[in-house]
Image (cartoon, rainbow, N blue to C red; front, side):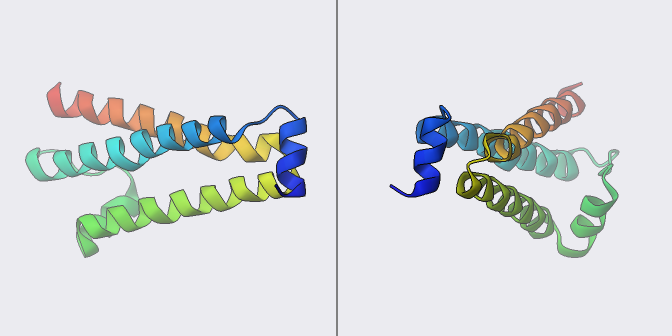
Length: 117
């Protein structure tokens, strides 16, 4: 066990909580948002992507552009979270997966509303 892991354990953090938060972030931001965005862009031609960066990536690279951007954001957030683990900063440790889970949950719900509404 590394010193940063010991400091986080002393601060009341556990690897299990961390893993669960990242699984929720992956499910909502990584899977839910991607699947619903692809469904919207493919099956609802009257709608277009509202995010200008995503729209440009979808127009130039298709779904691979969307997935690439999501992977880059996910990797960046994971790096920030691991930095928080190394410095034993619980806020920096937990904020990225929590933020991705909230954003992913909101965008997935919004996309489903657009898809079925």
